[in-house]
Image (cartoon, rainbow, N blue to C red):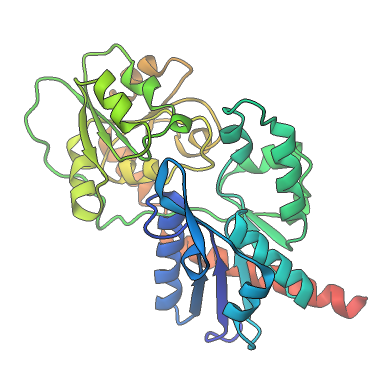
Length: 346
């Protein structure tokens, strides 16, 4: 697949210390690329002057310009460029690539039109117009699921430029373990504690279960006061996170706006069935026997609790990070070769 030491540049507005699916996906992909002999470099907000996003202390917004981006990239043209996000860093890299005539790929990680529609005065049409413009300049836009691809096509994206890039799971870290004693089932949520995740839909379900919330965010203080009966663990990672997954009985994913939901695969790897709404993300991941989807989240939880944990684990084992990374690499090569071909024809 080309020169294994050719540099891959990944530009992203989502990076450490943020804790989310985008950062975990990019970090794991970088590890996989390194193991395969590729040289990859991340360009992130910390390389620019930046400020903290209100209400999200871990999110840095960069004052990214094309000139500053050019200086960071350096004189040696990269072999491949991938733009992971549509924020200031992403726009600056996009502008530089267009100026230099470099091919680049993009990814659709976050359904911003649905997120921002929750705020007054932000019509979905405005956000979709911006996203269409951003991604139309890329040779390939990577999406995680079929339903997201169909949504983008419906919103006017070029179907010939939409390609798949799946997600994996560390099945060594995330695996079933003996459960502690309990008087009632444990239902767990893992992720950001913020309005767009619809966590209150989970916390408000009237079912005889113990509710665990793993994560943090701007809504935590308010929700912790409103639902004192739930257990709040804050951010967890590594073995601590894996143990919490494995000790629960059902994973609840109340978000209606995620494009994939990496945490669902992590939960399944620990033998947890998933209860979620029938929306993009869950409809692509939760197959029969691994959980339940429904507009009534409580009923979905009831049904999910009847699933066989062993089958959830078997299904998660089919999601390999190595396979996903090779898919990512193929997309990069196709995107670059297409632009080279178009240039020669022109």
